[in-house]
Length: 397
Image (cartoon, rainbow, N blue to C red; front, side, top):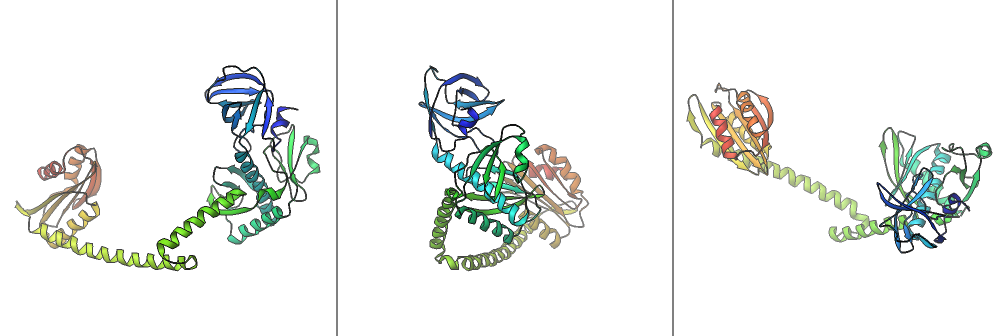
């Protein structure tokens, strides 16, 4: 039995083998076995894990026709017979997912003529890329319903090795990427596909298929779904979340959507009311600063240093002041964590060019900003205290 044939026996959980070689590469120590049941990463399917004797197999890769079994540390003695043991829970999960992908892709092709152009099997869900630019809920439902009907019919899943010259005998969904030793995975009268992955013997073992979501990706549709036990895992997780939410919201599941909609509407109303109150408070704050202004030659200077304030609030304060009193110059500085920001504004009377003033100050804090002669804002690093930045701005006036 060749290595190729041996690891394709999907149901083999343990096997006996010997080590041909033990070496090290950039990924770590690995062994090459006389024969193996460990599946190497390939065809969109992740590798198997398990043990070889008492050593954990962490990764399996095929490199230049050689199957490398990566181990945590080298064996002290590689002579004799070793028992390999497959992590069956992981293997069977991959069998369910990979076969489910074949079924769903064939269902999209059968019902809608949509071609699958790529496939990825992840830890939590699978994705296929469909060669279409958009998809509707009804389209997804049609394919999902057919896929689950094929599962319920318990159709056999067969594998067959063929030569390239024999391919014309089978209605393949797409041409295989190899021309030698071609392995077909066949669901009779439904799907014929070149594939080297692990699959169960019957569609019934896939259990079920559930499409979760889809999105546009590089001009195609990337569709997310789960198969087999992962469907139950999704159901358990989402049922637990719904149960928790019904307790928090004090509403039964069937009333959850209108309850949340009412809460969101109320929240928006409260946020709007809070914004109105904040505007009033900022107005009072601006009026208070007006009384603290100091007379300069040709204008009134209002300055203030803050901490932990948004620059948007400083903008509103400054704009209110210069709108109320045209002969003022307002300089406001704030420090938020390790960042300094400034807002400078003036009314129509003062002759100072605030943009020129700020451009002289920004290099001192490794900062940048923009604006016009009468209004400028920007920020940079806290290379000095907020009070020092404020006094530097005053000196530049």
